[in-house]
Length: 362
Image 1: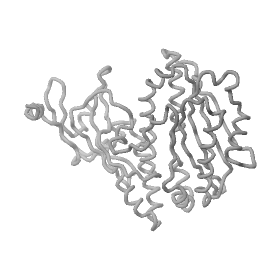
Image 2: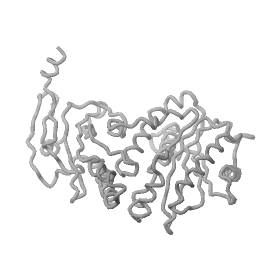
Image 3: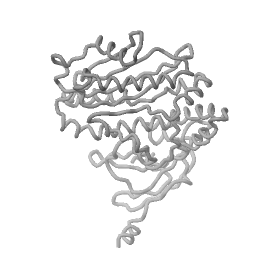
Image 4: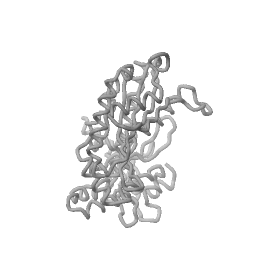
């Protein structure tokens, strides 16, 4: 940590070879979360969006309880200073926060997406070991736009169609899949629900009779929807870009898959669509109540552990930390008027003394 970090830290931490050092916090214009950790700027963005969405809910009697929960979401964030063993670099790492887990909360959507991505990446080495030659497809299945008041019925039709699709002979060679639902707002105030699916297939998929051409995907999806029109379908193989400097071919392929995973597991509704039309968003909330927007199957069925979601899971959504900290916690709280996080030294947690640890262990 450099001298600037030490001067604004305002907490105690154990420095190698020098014991526990305490610094006094002094309010300044450099006490924002982004001053300490520029990479955590998304916290300001998503928490500000949560205020906007919460404001819509607060004005609707039916959803005041959502607004109350969202007002407290991520109110105080506590970070630890973590040193990466390989590089010696010290950086802030989120260690504690409380989340509202309202479906359309922008903060929770963001953290949930990161959590699922992290789980997928953690499971990937085992998947690759079991299926080293597997290939991947990114599949988007759409329907015609519907009135926002008909969204629930349209989602039922789509989910039923998906169940028919995965039972078709053309789909039989598929090894596993992850499917998410996204709803966007049409310019005319309609709703555009669609599926994104990451599909794992054997290498033989691209050879002989197993290969499903684009026109066949359109035909399959139309038949499964029982529609009288040809729906828009996009399907493409997940292919690596040309390897960057010092990047191996396998690393380039992993990067391509990571991009596909991120696209599949992104937000279900864009925050901009939530706030563009309050009436549209409130009706969307009613239409999507208690509906599942994520599904998995085959060898990927348990990879996301969709039903497992705790505060701790959301805190660790950035992935496993490389390195430990000294137990101290640096607090930041949300300043609604400024739409940013700033230091909250009274909520800091000092590190435990090594002597305390020894007594506790003895």
